[in-house]
View (cartoon, one colour):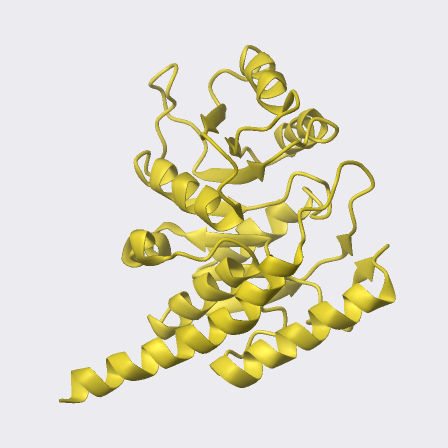
Length: 255
């Protein structure tokens, strides 16, 4: 069980990490929705120095949810991957058993947190992934060009890496604590979608069990997307680097 920072009493066994950059339109709504669920979750917001009122809103909500809402403020916009790494390091200090990744913009349905938790809790998987592609293509309000790009990118990653996961860039996940404890977090350097690919690949190559469950992904209706060309480029070449690095490690281990 985790220890609350403010009360030093036991909290939920689960924590949802939400990275933010200028999400003032969504952050209060997503936090309130998570705290309304029948299963309790703590929330850690990792804010990358938002220029809007995102952090201010979270601090205001901490007065209401003082034992279960936490804020980690960072200096500068450093990217999705480094936000999650900072969040992972923080939550590992407080002994949460289940650690979730989730977007702030409602593209991930908070109700599905319970389904991800149940799959992990049953013990059948060490990393459970909310998948857009395990049953057809479940994406709403994306332009067809982006749907095709995402779908083809996942196929490309599967071909290069050998991963059996259909939605390799998925960002809605539940980790058992032991997965993050075994990963060398300081060695994970990717910032964008390559981070999502890399964490699945590292978990898989370390012998952990991965499982996908179907979700419906809904494109944001408020706020601005953080996708850009550099993020896509990093993902394209990052998986080649990961596979090559793993191959070289095996060679040296055999010598």
